[in-house]
Amino acid sequence: MNPDALSEARAYEMLHEKSISPDDRPVFHVSSRIGWMNDPNGFSFYHGYYHLFYQYHPYRTVWGPMHWGHVRSKDLLHWEFLPTAIAPDTDYDKNGCYSGSALELKDGRQLLMYTSVQKESQPDGTIAEFQTQSIAFGDGIDYVKSEHNPILTSDLLPAGASTKDFRDPKIWRDDMDQCYYAVVGSILADSNGAVLLFCSDDLIHWSYVSTLEESRQEYGSMWECPDFFILEQSAVILASPTSMYAKDLEFHNGHNAVYSIGSYNRITHSFTRREVRTLDYGLDFYAAQTMLSPNGRRIMIGWMQSWDNCHKQPKGCRYFGMMTVPRELFLHNGYLCQLPVRELSDCHKNTIIFRQVSVSSPIELNQLKGRVLDMTIQIRPSKDQLYDHCFIHLASDGKLRTTICYDPRKSILHFDRTYSGFLYDLIAARDVSVRNRNGCLDLRIVMDRFSVEIFVNGGEQAITSVIHTPQSADRIILDAEGTVLMDIEKSDLNITI
Ligand code: FRU
Image (cartoon, rainbow, N blue to C red; front, side, top):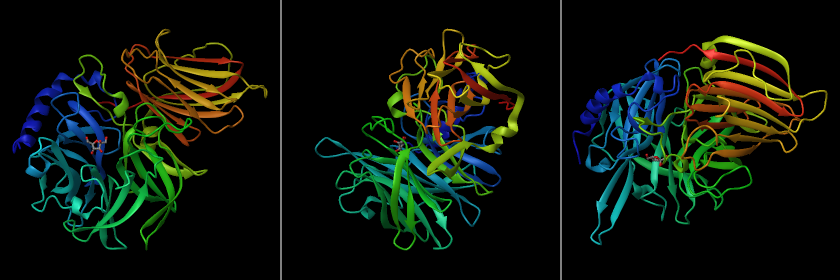
């Protein structure tokens, strides 16, 4: 145990962040201050700022003993680094402060709730890991861990549930029931991943309420980073299941990010599932968390990376890990839809519009280029004649490119970064089945130097991926087999770091 872990991390990041040029960071996506970043934590609004914490290992660009890094913003786009919030500096969390959430308390303090991890050598030579939930109170900069920690322990788990995989509390206050609730991920005795609901009157004493959702032998093992909220009268659970098997084009092997949509009975505390779907179909998306903004928007942010795809890193990088653009959630046609927060549209500049562009061979349009942009493209067949494929090549220099290809007959959208210039890419392409609209397709594409986020058909589906392509590759090339008509609107973004 290192009681100085927090002050050491704070000193280290102050000293070493200078080694990263702002040119090497995304402009409006949160990136690690120094070293490694994974899950978003404690996404919340507190005393006039949006706060975001993140799983953080400052000392290396690979995962290690987890701290909570910290940023804040007035508009969800301009982020300011704050000192490390918490560090593994007590007996009960000496092996890491894992993921969790934040809440403003009635007395004006900000509460952090996180998973405290402790590993102990056993008499038989093995190492046992214990995951418990702990809390800390703070003022938006400095946090003090509770003397009652850990406050939510494995003895509260249903019989047989895993004490090692018991993590990622998402807390909220229910004013109607006058208590705090938290969902926590675990693995049940029958090896199904589950989202467990707990409640407390005073944040110190907790009890188990119900099992809200389970993987039911279908959706992987441990459900990491659960979230639960009501959106337009439907109940929504977000989770990131590990060890999932691929199913058609909906789920892929390995770590997935899913949403389960259904209804919630407030009396019995039971959730009835209608459907489980993928939350984002890209190569880099995991561990999403939401918050409720002061004006009632449900806003989600995710880790723009995946465990299956993060083990090779660009040479010489001093930070590794970014978050997605924050996204507003809403329901439409039974889908959980997502679009970038409206603040992004307020930052548009140099907007250019092209209408009825007829594309049947590779073309580039005047000023249609860039690596930091927000662009909508509406695609439709020309004269009712269905085209075979339509292509949008981004981040291109003629040779390098990241490609979106649409096949209107199969209604499959293909994302491919094989030629994005990154040598060590295990998974470089993905096919996504999208709603068939007879050759019509609406895309919104948000780019920020090292990433491409695609929102399909008004946000019904999202496809998020990182690209390591040199910034000089900024051309956008449109192409088709057959003829398509495109309406395009592209804006640069007036955001400075
Ligand atoms: C998800 C996760 C969480 C855990 C954290 C550790 O990415 O595995 O379940 O709390 O990362 O960094």
